[in-house]
Length: 228
Image (tube, rainbow, N blue to C red; front, side, top):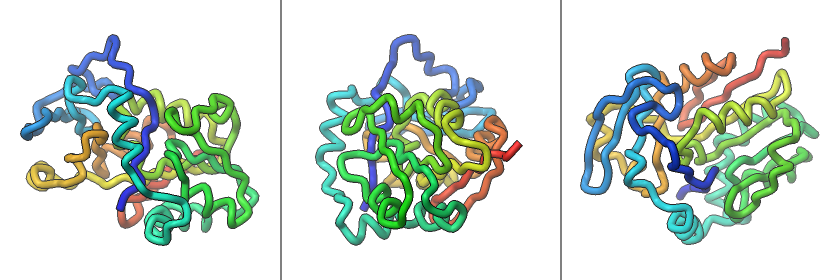
């Protein structure tokens, strides 16, 4: 079960794989498998796949179109509820919600709408509405999205700018535990997964954004924007 979606078409022009795509720190070799080489940032601890191994946008879309998750599927709804539920506890309807990287059929958007929230969706392949990225929100959700983003710093900064003071950026992505566990980690074997976050990495993200970070069980992280 997954809610894998794309969040941005890849743009490799001018991309320097020697720099961390999150904080521009220096890279160091982290791991290799039969398909890809992985690097780790010495500053924020992000692990990312070498850009030379990444799929083209066309091939990436083919992968996403294989996914059979639909908004009415009970298991899929339970999966995304791991992010939806804590956000609903912190922001009541009719708060404004952006589902970023929504994919073809968003159970997350459906759950929020059913509870009275005002929801917009954005996905570069399936819902490429640029006006959604110029609006303001109380909640922005990246549910199984951030691991697909090859240039996360720009994406996170743009979304943070769309978030009103007091709002929350909610992230659901499996967190990296250790190099030893990475070797047999099935999460990295999805060819559309290109970046992997640990608790330490998310702490750096929060620091750079000026956010309060809550690390919740089962791969959920909430970054709250200060009121002042």
